[in-house]
Amino acid sequence: MYEVLNKTFYESTITDFKNFLNNFSNPPVTKWVICSDYCINDNNKLYNTITFTVIPSVKSFQELKSLISSFALTDLKKTKTVKDQLCQFVKSGYLFSFTFLFDKKNKLFPDTNQQTYLVNIEQTIQMLKKWIINTPERKEYYSSIIKRVNILKQEVKRSSFNLNLFNNISLTQFLAAYLTFILTKETSIKPEIIGWFSDRDKMTTSYNGIIYDYYNINYHFMCQQDSIDDSSVKVALAMPTEGEKVLWYDEVIRVADYLAGALAERNYESKKNNKYDKIWEDAISDNLNLSLIKLNYDQEENAYSARRVIITKKK
Image 1: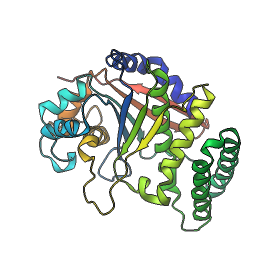
Image 2: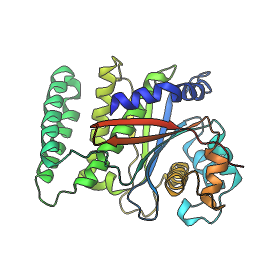
Image 3: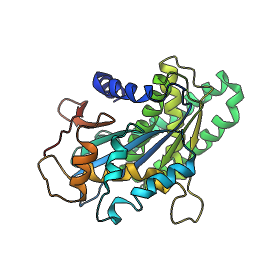
């Protein structure tokens, strides 16, 4: 999937993304936030969506939370109307959004089974052991990942193992790692910190949060493959505070929530003049700071495909 996604990204999205990054190159921004939200396996939606928003850290975190909550006080499912300011913000050039969309009937991991994952887990463990040898200063960290991956191995062997959930975990962490890699690669000055702020989901809480370990592994692996030194880049992970009902960073992921919900709800022909339509027309359409990428797996060809979908105003 990496080659297909990379080819699609560098056809047109890269130009728009670089233009966005250039807005924060003088003076250079070195701290970035990647927020994510999801709409997966919702019976009331047409599609599955995974959305990320890339935001430069040019305001204090509290200022950013206050700004977003001023025009998006609650999640999309709890609001009746969408404010103009939200749509303007999505298009403003202050953030860049990526939504990966796939048909609910299309299985992006059609050939995976428990045995396949067990083989992959063992390969991951062997790779981590090599990293310990090559970077002994990170021995403690990589050893801790190996322990958690070994626990995962035991879970995978269980007859009750949730294969569909782990497929979703695998896809989401891969996409998050890919965007973190692209951000590291394409910024004019290498980032000091990149923080991943995810909505709370079964994908992020299951198996001791293994999604974050695989995210770190794949990010580092992609950088290695592209000869990018990521040793100075700190990857930070936003975690929910134990027992809290509302995420302490809930406001910051709200744009991703609105986009994921709207893009999962409606196709181009089903105009309904509702809150989803408002987002489509005023935030998504003709937006150069947003890339909608359709993912697909062809079972007959045994091949992945990806294409960028351009949305234009209907009015």
